[in-house]
Image (cartoon, rainbow, N blue to C red; front, top):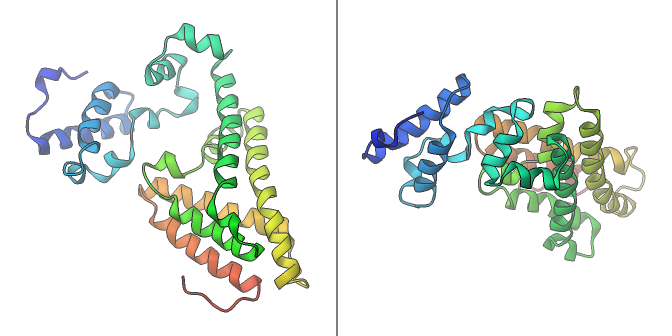
Length: 248
């Protein structure tokens, strides 16, 4: 723990302290999360100060990102949420119960979010499908957790130890793909009726591109790889639906 009276007054030194706290957490089990979050809010909330932050600090809201599911305790969750353990156990039986509830909520929330997206307004199924890809690029804003996928993150970490998590994540992601398949199938009938591929395989390919790109977004701490991958995906979809090459 760092005594707050020892926090430097210089903005540059405070930004350096934030980076040091992040490195400390990433390389050991120590690191003052409360201090990190408080100092980071001062910078992130001010457009003139935000550029002073190292890129990793800009995207990492909490040191708990380095703990992982297995190492995170109910106490950690309560501290981050600002609730008591009594409140936690009033709503959830266990940490695993919370994770399953979060996965279910994520599926419901994202289904509604994408259902209300503007690309659905087109009467052409291929335009809707390409609009989905464009919409995915438009929402690459904010911190990493805001535009990456909770289900993809959860299943990567827990697939071997929590079969119920794996099943829940599979169901959530596959449900999203099933919704996409409606437009893929309709577009295939119009533009590529004799193509040997299935709508299901294209749906899973689209999500494979996204999930893989999200991994690189986390590794590189930014959405550039996701943007480029979506551009390639859009060009590929144009090709399999026999559309003129589009450099968008």
